[in-house]
Amino acid sequence: MNRVVRLLPLLLGVGLIVLCARLPALPLGPVPVTLQSFAVILAGAVLGPWRGAVAVLLYLGLGLAGAPVFSGGAAGVAVLNGASAGYLLAFPLLALLGGGLVWRVMPAGSTPRPLWLFACGLASSVLVLHPLGIAGLVRALEITPLQALSIDLRYWPGDVLKNALMAVLASAVHRRWPGLRRGQC
Image (tube, rainbow, N blue to C red; front, top):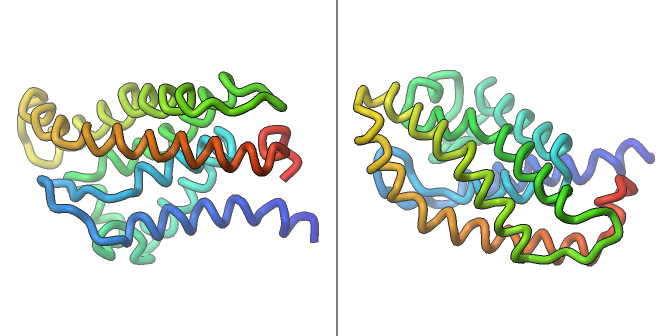
């Protein structure tokens, strides 16, 4: 029973990522705007860097194995040839870095501060998500890095909002269940 209880947050993380990927997307360019990155950074911030990254890897594994869990119901390894491949491949690193930074600035037993969590999430996006997303755009669309950057900049306002929402929700979760940070949940 204890193993099931310990796996539940991980499975909830996978489920949240799937749900956010399957919600209607905004067609803002070659990569649709979804809430996937929000769910990924939230998984890292709430579950911690390692469990968050494992949740994301499980999600990616499901999709690459053929489950229709990606945006628009896409599935299979063919998504790795598309414009969103760089962003998808960045997700485990986003959860790992974002979760690591959040847990670093929020020691066990401390009060979560949404502004710090927001800064951690945004820094992770800047360092991991956007560079790998740009690289994926360059490869898939056969464009220059500068052209890919101009496409990627369209996603920044939404990314700021997603990280703000993550910070508020992750802070609330950590206040409600302080044992998450100590590995007791």
